[in-house]
Length: 173
Image (cartoon, rainbow, N blue to C red):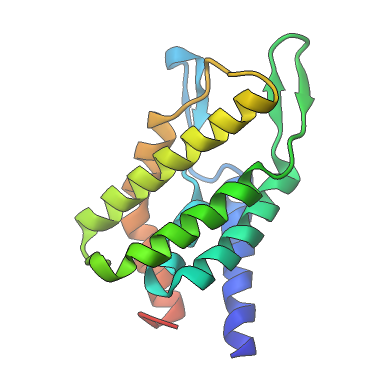
């Protein structure tokens, strides 16, 4: 059991670094959104929340959100400085993990359409809640990208799910 937990957390850290280095990022000048990139950490959270239960979703969401919050940099448009906001992802990711862990019984988690739909909706809701909380704390950013990263993440999710299923060799832990 301890080795399984260690291997899962190594996968969590690996997913974090894939997102942090902007692996497979695309550059767009449309609506000044800049680059969009798939959220591998969120896909990892979605995978394990759907494959296990809500407690795994909460804990993986907490540690994944903590990893994400250690390096989140938010562009402040007034004076071009970066301001760090810690705690937003640590709040939102466990909520998403809990919800996905609760609804996993009602979904066909091996269907590609289900994976794409759940990943798109979860990514969109997560990005909206992050934008909303950042807006309450700092200010609402008009150039915050919602749809592009959500679509890109959901398109790559079935491939990432397949790789995770191949690596972990289990449907449920």
